[in-house]
Length: 98
Image 1 (cartoon, rainbow, N blue to C red):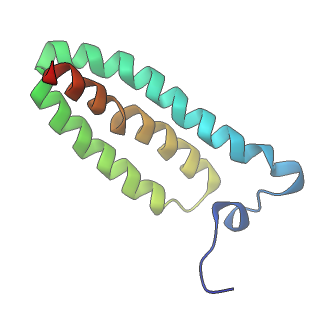
Image 2 (tube, rainbow, N blue to C red):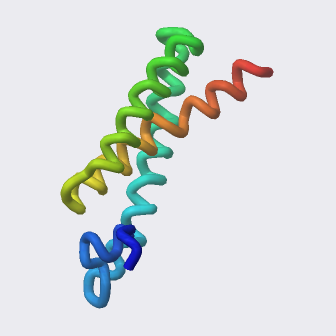
């Protein structure tokens, strides 16, 4: 081994715990769905430019937290929050460009 670990090996996501790998992606995309709804409304209230800056900053912090997560539950929470805050600014940016 060259010193690198994967999420599966670090949190022992094999055999009976194997399906948890798939739920991680599902949790992230559920954060994207709810984030798009919420951030769209916030963009209408605060203004799109402020919303993009705020959500990119929070999303960046969530992704950093994801890389430092000490447990599998923390990974799940950070994946949801990263999906909630990091993806919706892309949609708001597209709306601003039109």
